[in-house]
Amino acid sequence: MSLRRRRRGMTLVEIMVVIAILVMLSSAVAIWALSQAEQARIQRARLDMKSIVQALDLYKAQHGRYPDAQPLSSLQRQLALTEVHDPWRREYLYSVEGGTAVVRTLGADGAPGGEGEDADLSSADPEH
Image 1: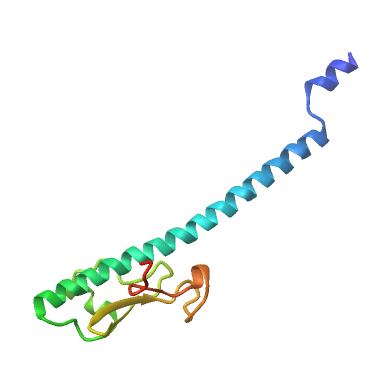
Image 2: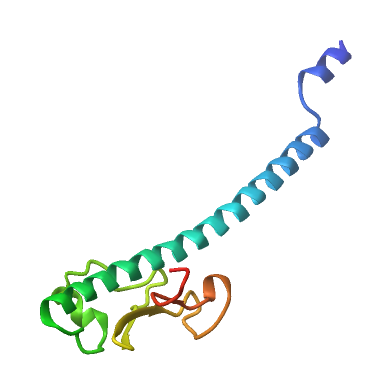
């Protein structure tokens, strides 16, 4: 009879092993999800900058010049932009360089330079 009782349930060691396996699996999934979220923010910033440059190019086609360099929030209504803030909640930077509109973001850290999610992104980048 004592053998039957032992086989009905799981021992504490078995439960701890199962919990350890679940923790390792959930950690791996969390790390993967965080890297995907970082890539999604970078991709969103690139798409936003492309849309803003297109709106600026349309403005130039209609008015013969780009709007004066100023915060995009002041141009938002005039350019019919739905978004002027990057995925890190800072306003995109706009300038005219060599007769071309350039839109930038300083990345997650908000400082020039950096790597990964902290890297600066620009509509003038060749990979954009």
